[in-house]
Length: 538
Image (cartoon, rainbow, N blue to C red; front, top):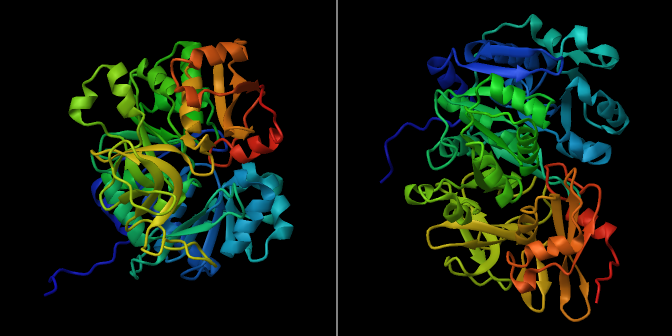
């Protein structure tokens, strides 16, 4: 017997319609590329989104066409999210940090027909132009007055939409239609394309606004530090609109001072970003003695949340929540919302729980398996390969030539993890980064986080290097904090009571800066190249 309910498609334009009906006066604020703060309401945004939808029709954009964008987090890119997907086309958000070679690869691989970009990235686009095979037209995300020399070879966004109607009847189509796409960062091999459906992102939106996830609601103000090209800014352009949250976009200013100005002036209550930007903000607060009384919580993802960062932000009354997900998961898989009895604990007792990645969102199934594929128990002790499945998790990569899933339908994340009996996930390492020493697995993340607790350590990265007896041993690579000169022996002494003996790094090396990838993660592949052939002290 089948249910007798209406079958209405889950489309992202329904989020927009809902927001206009219920939260029309809620603001969206941007620090623009041109400089001034731009401020308008959801009702204002909807009219411009309609104008853009009409403009896309005038350009000849057809359903299924890929529209590329290289941009900062701004109101114009926000408008693209709803207009492009709303007409049945696909918004391809491109990471400018990929560099010309990889950026050209993903644009050609996606077969983008139009390319929108901020003026900041005009030199990158100029370098890309001779390499692009499918792009018909280039559009600058600005007006004619600010287009500059780049405007000679591109149209201006404001001119494109100026004479279009601010009314548009949104079409209805299959909810499994593609709406956006992102590419993985390509740290090993070419970047791989992940194509999101309307259905997947609407379901992710419902789950991400739950109290056991981001938990944002009307009356909150959220600053999305995480870039829109990094898995749709962790879905916040959709989740914020769904529940009437005031959105603040930082534009190109992601340094500590720039973030502080927006957080402070707009009375932001919640923010989201990778550890490197949170560290920059913390260092600015400590250096200036300033405070952010309105900011109560922050989501930290992309890489492991260091204990020193939790403690540092706690001093300023800000609770950092760790989350975990992937480009392939739309992206949120878990959020660490602590149960009330743990939330009430003193900080020292709460920290071990806060360092975990949290519990899975509804409809996200997780399991850990051994190297030979045997299912391992969720007992907080066994660690193994983390595999996931769910309605917003990838089935296959765009133009995939090989199977993406296991034979029984799970996606292998490439992470090594532990799941406890209460469902809390703890990522212990990436499978390619785990250090295998004497038949045991050592977590590079654990060592890095411990090292970051030293007052003289600004950044830390750990790789395994060859050892004639133990196969591999940990090498700790450190960037010193400004004004500090710790020695290798001092750092090793600091770590003695914080790590098991097997995890103690055999050596410490200092460098000026760690190689950081397109999504804010340490590039272990580059560190391995730098320290290729490194001989540990005997």
